[in-house]
Image 1 (cartoon, rainbow, N blue to C red):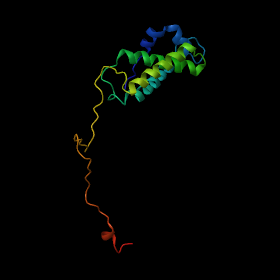
Image 2: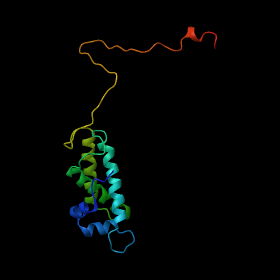
Image 3: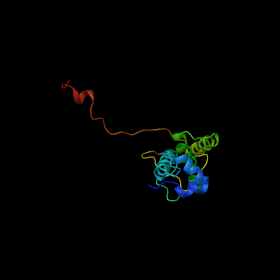
Image 4: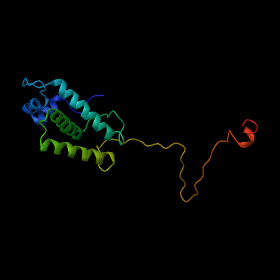
Length: 148
């Protein structure tokens, strides 16, 4: 499954300097593509944990809101790993998680078709009494008599 955002999305959202600062693990002053890719994958997996309750995965399209949220989560996780997380990055991450929580509870949506919930063998009749049906019991005292 593809990530909700790619490096180019992060470059637009935060700029090259921020990506370099947040991804440079060896101090060479360069953007580390592997670190960014891992952060985007981790962010996508975190997003999916919220999205999967309301939508079938993988999503057929990626709404722009998820691209932004994926970027916010990825940047915070990259920054926290090397100690360059700021209050702003933490706040963006927390806001993303709050929005995802609202998504998971159905209070906001992505504008995509939701998961069809099918309940097997459940019939609801308005004003009727609740009844259950079951197969004949396989083991009864009579059938087991003499075995124990």
